[in-house]
Length: 211
Length: 211
DNA sequence: TGAGGTCTCCGCCCTAAGACTGAGTTACAA
DNA sequence: TTGTAACTCAGTCTTAGGGCGGAGACCTCA
Image 1 (tube, rainbow over the protein chains, first blue to last red):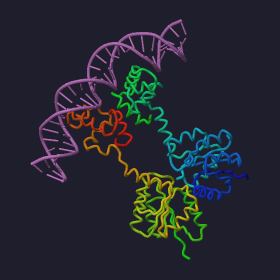
Image 2 (cartoon, each protein chain N blue to C red):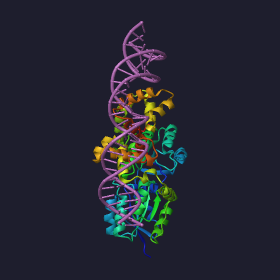
Image 3 (cartoon, chains in turn green, orange, red, cyan):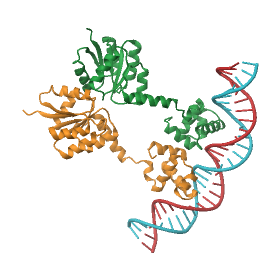
Image 4 (tube, each protein chain N blue to C red):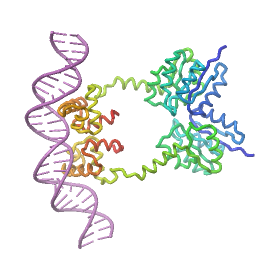
């Protein structure tokens, strides 16, 4: 019987030790490589050609997502399981879009992780309930219509500058347009956002992280 | 020769496995207990009376700091080493104030962790360089003079309302004072903050988390 | 007692902001 | 070809914002 070849990517030595020591106790699994960064993970994947990769997202050099994307592009048959400490919204979706199959948290039990590996070679995904919840709220949020979504490109640009605290004249100078034009944009922006003045628009921009 | 009795607290099973499996390879160490939450850590510490505790801060129930405090209060001779995934500013200082001796990150090598344990029983602290840096910047920030520190109480109150996006009239109504008075306050605020208009003052308020 | 800081208010003045209306340009899709 | 949307600019008008000077009431500290 052919063992499932697993590669472990994590910048925490202790975590790699823990995972490897447990995986080795399973008869149908074998750890064929370890990497401590996204960069080295790509090189190692080329070399050892694992069946499954357990990938931490939050690493010192922050290359977990890039590594997933790169590996998936080069070797589509390698299944990647994200195994990370917590749910960082800014990473969950890029990671899944990158082609990762499953998404687990390190709070998962050893059995769950092993189970996810066995399912991975059958291309069956395992998504941690908490992550699944995030996905649902994201989908809801995605269908939610934020006021600034129907700003035009130019208006959004102006809104950002308002958020920087610029006056109409400064914005005009910055964008090489007339102050009258800026006023028109600002007027339209206030209308679309449903606010009364530029100060509230600036606050809106900050609350929605447009600056 | 008496072994150093170590207890490991982490809500990640894999991490506990990794740490334990490594510590067990050292002749002068022995793992006498594992806990997966702050709550159970306190109970276990009472029971096994370890010399040193490796404590993760970021656990599902978020009781790492409380556990440190409680254990240190009850058993001052037990040395606690914080061993956590990343630097959460809101936890670093409470943790150290709680009586923890050392602060390591999980990116630390196995050797560093073992070394920290050996130093702990001699009551010598090991602070991860990155954490030390944070401590320094915190000390600097503490002595740093932010512009809004010389606002009067009333002015600060007005600044917050500016940050909410209120107009002078609205602020006047809210504080039951005349609009002229508000204008005076606003004028003083702008002068003290060194900004030109209320929009920038509002942004200042947001950047400095006054709202 | 007097000096200084804070909070309150007033008046005068100027300017930036914003509403409203109108219009010329391009680019793109029906 | 003809809308339609986006971007541009103009003119007019009203108001909120903000600078400047002055002042009275209150409190605290020297």
